Image 1 (spheres, rainbow, N blue to C red):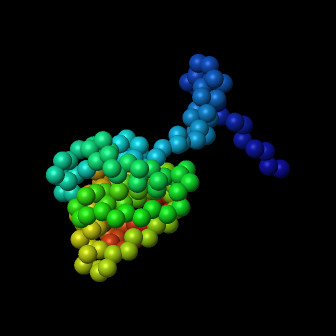
Image 2 (cartoon, rainbow, N blue to C red; image 1 turned 180 degrees about the horizontal axis):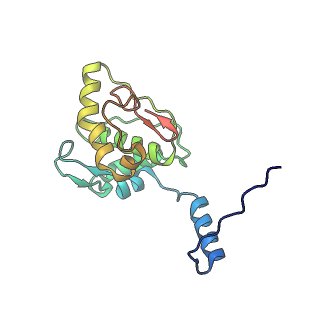
Image 3 (cartoon, rainbow, N blue to C red; image 1 turned 45 degrees about the horizontal axis):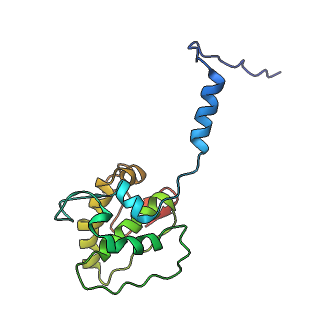
Length: 165
């Protein structure tokens, strides 16, 4: 006849064990705060010297005209379509990068980025995407320290918890 082994007890006492357990459980199930794309970028995004003339933390206050666009791309925004008609070199790519980081962190799902040629794709991944994933701590943690030869981290595919890029 099989008898289960008795439960092992820790020899280290935990003061207020029940309160500690409830605190740990509460932290584990607490939903993430509602953030807009601009707030996420201000809190998490790091610009690298490879992709920016002003490396360091992203500051939406530096480009206030992008705030509304980024906030309309947020998960809880009622906006269904965003159209940007801007001149060149004014921040559209950075809006896309902030939105991508927001999706990966706050709303994991499959994402498709389409570029016109493989050569441009390779350049974008090397100059924009990989530096952002490596320098932004929350994204670096989500993508993990994957090796460059890992099949879940190629120029075509980047896997992260809850989604794929």
